[in-house]
Amino acid sequence: MSNKVRRTGKVISDVSEKTIIVGVSWSQKDRIYKKSSRRLTKLVAHDPKNEAKIGDDVVIEFSKPISKTKKWKLVEVLAK
Image 1 (cartoon, rainbow, N blue to C red):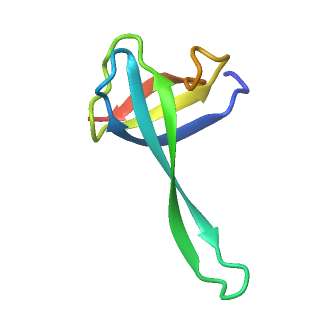
Image 2 (image 1 turned 90 degrees about the vertical axis):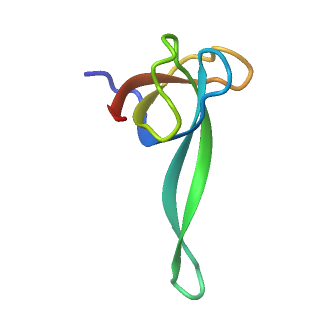
């Protein structure tokens, strides 16, 4: 098992060739009112086999830069 950072999220876009955009949601708590709100971070990931489609739950892993914006790789598709 590798010690690289892994994130799970949902595929938002798969328009580009060998590239997917994954939305990773997390909660942010307000400092004053203590109310938490959901935030969405968009991460660009490398998908060499074009196996992930829009709406799939995926696991991505941090890697060396593949291009200017791609710094994540697709590890596996959890649910179609």
